[in-house]
Image 1 (tube, rainbow, N blue to C red):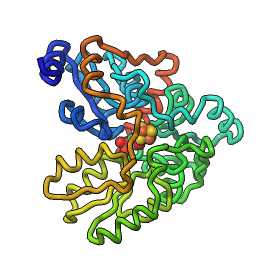
Image 2 (image 1 turned 180 degrees about the horizontal axis):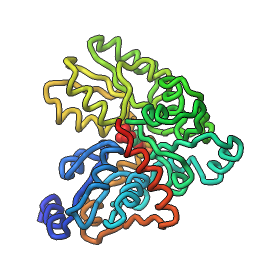
Image 3 (image 1 turned 90 degrees about the vertical axis):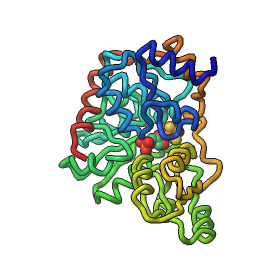
Length: 303
Ligand code: 13P
Ligand code: SF4
């Protein structure tokens, strides 16, 4: 039986749902029940009632958030090694050090962080709501990690003092975008609009007409009357942008912008994940309880 048909059969038999991030391979996006950015996927996982099994095609921290937010469901990640390197850049020791150095300063953690780090923070955020989360706090000084670029971006937008933890956390894929490449493309395609993810550096963000999460970029492109867009985020988003906007043209601002961790998930691994219900994501309840508070506080905000 062809692989895709067998995935559909297994999904039905196991009462499973496939959630896929916007950076997943095209063939995975096409077979998924839902494709979205990290906050949309968290909400989907949290609200899921029918399915017994959630196959989370993305990287570790996203599947962990799903397991934390919906502990009654079995959540599996198709590839054991699909880990976000940015999340690994912030250890619990570093978090504790920052909190000791800056007592009484609230700590906001980007969801791209380990569950054990989230358990120590006051509230989480994603790239879609980071500005609103910071604005929701009364404090004028905020500890923020692990992404230095997102920290700078929210500082610019809110006018608050943002202390990055660690000092230089970054996404290795978004680091590849450089302002020179964007400027050259702008000269080549003067009619194009530039959309960038806030994980890009400040110079790239300055070149952009719009800065937002992956799904916010999709919305912007759909609603815009422009016909051509230069995209500053991981290449997987282009599949969704092209599929949703057949009459529009999408160009990647740097051809090599591929997240190797996101791309570890393949149809074969998705099939095995469904068949063998692996690899189950489990977060110890002592950590999950505290991390859930920080995630739920974020999700309760009207953004
Ligand atoms: P989004 O929440 O915008 O989808 O971003 C997640 C991510 O990992 C970006 O690199
Ligand atoms: Fe992590 Fe960057 Fe990959 Fe997003 S694109 S999952 S931040 S390494």
